[in-house]
Length: 172
Image (cartoon, rainbow, N blue to C red; front, top):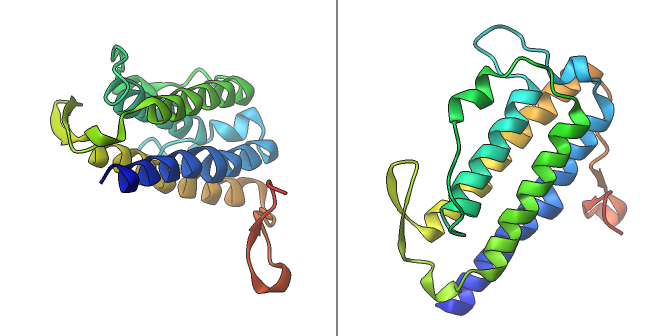
């Protein structure tokens, strides 16, 4: 089981660091600070709010819940923020959190992946907590891509399809 658990944890790290984060970085390259904080209506999230939310979620569930750091998250602030924090600052914070989460997963004893943790007032096993963050990151990355396409237009050019095989354009 620990071999499969280690592969799962390594794949989670790869998705966060090498798939979702580069896509978000590419989006932020195309957006202005004003566009990062644009929202269709009061009930919708801006890209900026989604970045704060991804940071808070990954920190709470992995850095704290799996890695053991103290949880200080105030989830409501992620959606209430209207101060238009510059995109470079948002991205730096998200990058730092992804690195902390990946470090926590790298240090985690894979034989304990079925142990229970109390996260966000829920009892979950570590495997479920990690899976939650990866799928959550994927969903909001998709929203950020859609908002970027709507606001900035154009092809995001995430993949090169040489020989019919998709290859990400941010890796060699």
